[in-house]
Image 1 (cartoon, rainbow, N blue to C red):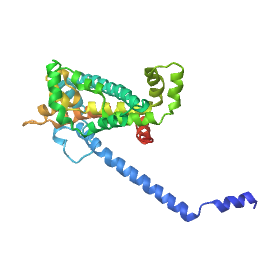
Image 2 (cartoon, rainbow, N blue to C red; image 1 turned 120 degrees about the horizontal axis):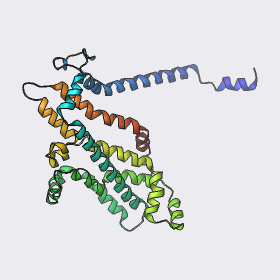
Image 3 (cartoon, one colour; image 1 turned 30 degrees about the horizontal axis):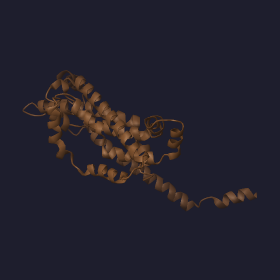
Length: 294
């Protein structure tokens, strides 16, 4: 046996350590599979029940027999889901873009500029997270009403132009992790503050901005309160408010058609699942790296 082979034999982990490591991995993957199944079970039941006939919706069978695809055809015919889907997409994208751009600008100001009272002012911004939304709900509604903008989509997203304390904090943490020398070199080359933000800060914090976009799009997509307050016309409904209308129509009274309500619920839920899987890499990277520098 050569010296190299002897060294390899010497540094090989003992059998007991390899066994414990293998057992730990098996337990880890078993727990991972268990919680994954546990997490997916409600949606699996929702999907299964939406494909059942009215008399079999709440039975214990997981596989529908027969498969009632007509539930989805009927719900598309019974409600203007395509219009509601378009409204939700428009409102969600505008709300996410508005809060992403505004919070990015504000966070850049708090991270780059150094002025007296900066930390105190930033503390006041963070303090707004302690203020529940229901406290300002009525005053904000009166503002939009006096402006004559109720029964429009503008109140559902335009408020995001003023930023959000949570998103400002999160993006600021990313900006603080960037070398300040990059910004100073750009200033020496004659770049304006806006150009520094647009061409240096934003591209280097793309992950954080995508996370903010996903967060806000999800919040807007599932928001029921704002559409319920501001919208009265059916053709302006977003999907959550439309789903409530479907529930009021088919989920109450003597002829409850829960299969129709559940089919509509799947249609409302599925786009968010697709968006999460498309952006999960940025989502996980953004969460993992937020707060590395204070």
